[in-house]
Length: 348
Image (cartoon, rainbow, N blue to C red; front, side):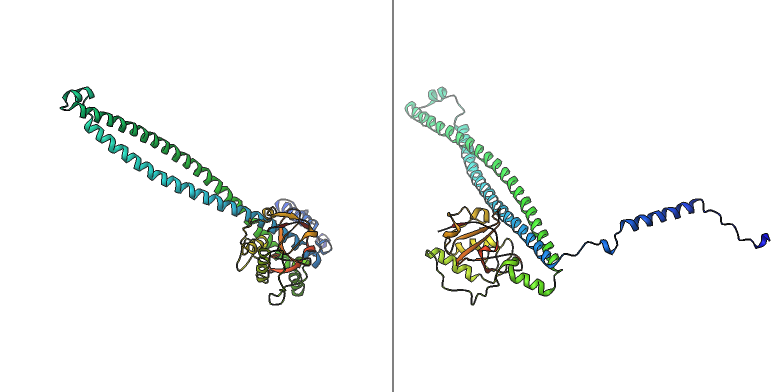
């Protein structure tokens, strides 16, 4: 009967048992850690995507204006450095000429001044002529002392210029690092916005782009949007006319025309066409001219938005402005109440 018994199951022991137990526990832990379909993150709705893209575009525009400011400062630092180097080179040339003149004088003095003056007087066949020459040499000596002092001042000035150039070089390097940081921020924000927009269906994306941050009234057509340019003066009229001429041109961050613009680049170019130089950034343009209230707005005024003064447009009347909204939305006409109004400035 023993031959017909079922073999007794032996408990699994040893390394194989430990490996199996470890795998089982790991599998259980993984199953517990991984959420099932019921716990998956919900997909964003089209409205949520549009809202997030709006935020990213705004953040990118803030970084763009910071980039523009850093670029302007870097350009100024580079110009100052070049000017310092040029001045140092010019002064070095003059210093070398002064040194050559001193060297020639010293050589002549050595050749003619080997004897003591009293001996020279004693040996001279014409004492009166010698004394006249001695007086002349005294005057020459005074001029030599003056020339030597001039050389000393030149050396000191060149040393100062070189120290200033070194400081300016450090400032330029800092500005370039700042540029790099802001450029990276802008590109990252825009890349994320593009990624989110790719989630929308083609009709949803088209509707968003046509609306310009979800708020513009529509894309302006350069051939039909322009009416008579009414402005308080000729310069303002010229700036408004330029803005009308830019309708439909693409937004490119950091661009100042003539084929593409960012928001402050457009207003700067518009007023440049009227013979007025504006600073580069929104937060410096708002301090140009004089502040005006919303109720006082006239065509040609600069209108600013958001608490950080990160967006600007050119007012054209009837509650409308021309502005460069963001990538994918070209220069267009839009109502000024589409964004949080922060202030306005009258340039001329």
